[in-house]
Image (cartoon, helix red, strand yellow):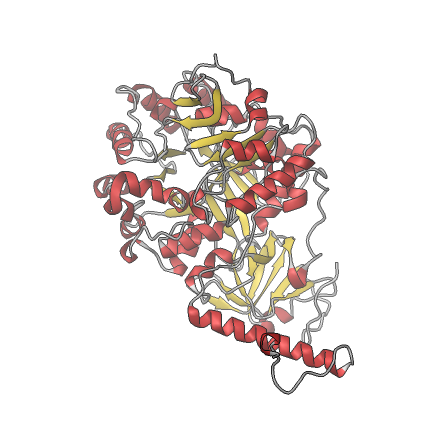
Amino acid sequence: MSTMPVGGLVPQPTDDAAELVVRNAKIHTGDPSRPQAEALGIRDGVITVIGDDSDVARHIGPDTKVVDALGRRVIPGLNDSHLHVIRGGLNYVLELRWDGVRSLRQGLAMLREQAARTPKGQWVRVVGGWSAEQFAERRLPTVAELNAAAPDTPVFVLHLYQSAVLNRAALKAAGFTKDTPDPKGGQIVRGRDGEPTGMLLAAPSALILYSTLAKAPVLEGEDKKTSTRHFLRELNRFGLTSAIDAAGGFQNFPDNYATVVELAKAGQLSLRIAYHLFPQTPGQEIDDLARWIETARPEDGDAWLRLNGAGENLTWAAADFENFTQPRPELSADYEVEFEKAVRLLMENGWGFRLHATYDETIRRDLGVFEKLAAEGLFPAGNRWLFDHAETVSAESLDRIAVLGGAMSVQNRLSFQGEAFLRRYGPGAAADAPPIRAMLDRGLTVGAGTDATRVSTYNPWVALHWLVSGRSVGDLTLRPPANRVDRQTALTMFTLAGAQLTGEDDVKGVLRPGCYGDLAVLSDDYFTVPEAEIAGIESLLTVTGGRIVYAAAEYEGLDEELPPVPSWSPVARFGGYQASRPTALTGARQAELLGEAVAESERHRRWRTARGLTPAAASAPFDPCFDL
């Protein structure tokens, strides 16, 4: 593998040569003892030296790969503390992503083109990562638009936890008829003739949406590995080197975990994954947990793939749905009975857990169970545990969580659902959703993530922008400055805090000798770009364990080759996240850019004139409108 030439650093024989050196960088280490550096070296997947060129020079041997960062910002590899990476990988090459698309018109054009390329028997599916609020039109596609774009190919478009739009062909493929009953917690919208129109509503449960999606064809065998590897490469594109998989519905263990297990055995993971186990069958949760406890323990695995505990649901009855277009769901009055059995079983066997909880009403009831067990000396018994989401958690509940040694993981779900939350609960509640500053002020570990892929986008920079700015993808300010965090704190939430949630903070989340060689060379300096441009940052070079797992721009071709995706796949034509530069420019900046464009045009004209490729210009501008 070739490397970039670096003057002044001469390879020499050495017993402790680094395998990879990154130099000429603005390194944010995340290490308080040495916050900044210019160069580092990695050997056997671990950082061995960090400092400046003189510090790393003696670690450069004849076979050392040397990468010049060209003065760019380098950060520790990002760690999404709540990502459905396993499920997302199994489906990635099947999905048309509207993540980052700025208009519905563009999205429908992509859909129309994809429908023409999709083979018979497959569906076109748009599954998460977007909101109607990000579109210039501020609306969903209509059933008529989907029918016009794809008259014969099934199309399924999922919108958050709220709804799905199906075309005529998808209704037929999914088996929806006039006689199909509404499932519990969901609604099939019908026309005056009683026939399904193509709209499905979560009311409030999203199970109707996910169960319909589950009727679409899936990948098999090697195709699942290829899809997962390309999804991990897409995550690497944004500087992600680790993720905590939060399990989720329709993710069965061990079947749906087999692909990442096989990739881990083959050394083909490019992202470190700590995963959770989520009982899938209501009424069978305790049996599932008991069976898993007999065969595995948290932290089983290695640096690339390891079990982190149970969750994000322990029992289905204790789960509150986060469809903010609907009222808060009322959970059963006695769900604590089975929930306590699950928590007790985990605590007695050394298993930690994470717990999906959107509303304070749910969190208070869960805490009551934990406090009962704590009084018996059974909680937390040295086990790591945390609440996920917690948009409406109260100050009192945060105090109780702190006393019980819990942690938090927050996601930018309100980047995509903020407008719906604001309409239902008002600006006061939206300002504190979730109360990030109050969590941090209590000394709680607060990891940050995305909850991708079926609602939020997997792009972590959209989440980092939300943490810092308090704004949604529709550019609505929800959280005031008092409930925002500075850029360094937000980055720590996406690096070190995630490592603390998996008990890996001694080797992950910072750049210092002895820690994993996980880092990202950024396209723009996160600490200095205008706030509005944070969401547009990408990685140009991502390194996981000393391996270059993503490379772009000057570094293109330094990463590992992947097997091709199917030629008809949406990923083959459109890729994943649709990057675009911010459009919200100030008038002064617009004038500057226009001036730069005019100057560039004039330089180009002079170049062509000097070579006889165009006539010499007249001494004054000519406008044919005034040629009288």
